[in-house]
Image (cartoon, rainbow, N blue to C red):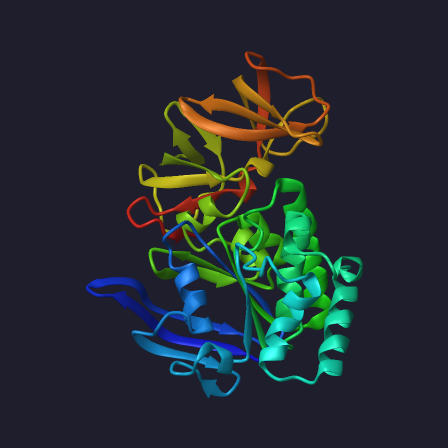
Length: 356
């Protein structure tokens, strides 16, 4: 396993610049996830690490080598693609063995590696099948196995789960995490799905518009976002964020006032952006619920099983809160919701920066 260092990385396509001098450090054995909306530059960054895109300026260092000018096969990497990219006429065994044959690895060594990896990925009973006879999850495991047999320094994953259904995605997320814990290779993983990022990563890099908005552990990204974009992007359902004005003892949205501790540096009458996660807004159902209470009319209830999402408006501002999955509540009900304002976030309305 190797470290990866990206230094002032820039990518241009003619006059269009899509990466604006990004810096990332990935430690040996670390699972780093690049996440962000479409067009943020995450896949371009991954392809530049792989050598599939040229570097306009800056450096990519794998281990102790600057790899800017090295061919992909000389970088010590293996890549798993979104579309599996399996050879349809070859069996699972032949697909996994193909790159080793090209590298002129001895036949007995190839056989040992393929069968060892097949055992790890539970593919041993599928080795004689062709891709057309496999499910989507099985094909993705074959694509992962083809990468693992090469014993690379670094694994690169380019949105590998996006073609799977919801159940398979959850299963494959767990398999990838368990695989990383077993093999301890350095992994760079690209996704637009923040749930994948939160559940898989040791380090998350949140990107937008070719720049890095924040990088840190999943806990840091979720509980201590650097700005409004990160706060709103990371979380499902997303954070409630609305315009507000600092009021005496709290903040005011329209005619509604929520008592809360105002951060230093703002004064009564100042405008700001106020944010709270749905997890910190709860239905008052008779149990002891901390927070500032407000009576609202329910617009919509989404049943998720273990919990319900409660949609309502606070003086015209759409808000999502939560209730227990067994709570008896429906659209049109007048209910009390408790806002745990100790967990509130505040942002600068001009640049989206965090006000602490």
